[in-house]
Length: 99
Image 1 (cartoon, rainbow, N blue to C red):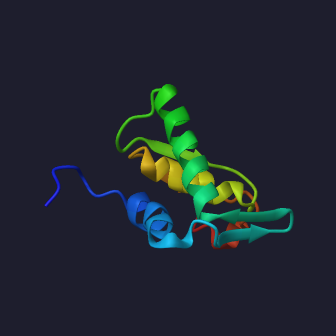
Image 2 (image 1 turned 90 degrees about the horizontal axis):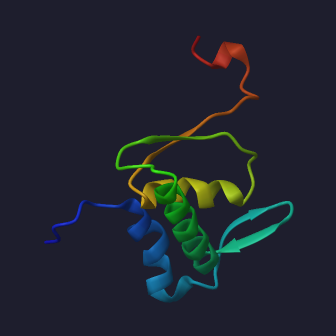
Image 3 (image 1 turned 60 degrees about the vertical axis):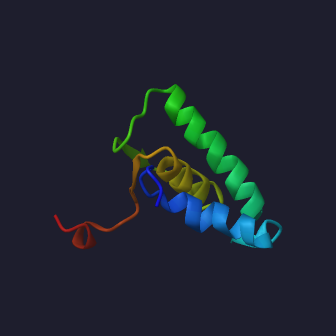
């Protein structure tokens, strides 16, 4: 048993790379594709950038962005940093926002 807290990025991103799926496409959008290997590398950089900005364990990180391959990079990078990603959708109609 490990002394470090569970981190889903290690299972969902790194685990796929470790199982030899690094070259497999993880996400695709209208402008291109992102492999598991690229997702691992970019989410690590995003995580480090959040740490450099002073983001700590369980801090909330708002993700206000388009639905592109950059979204999973930010989402998994925030999780990798131990933060809690909070995706927001400005296009959600008021009647679906719960307000």
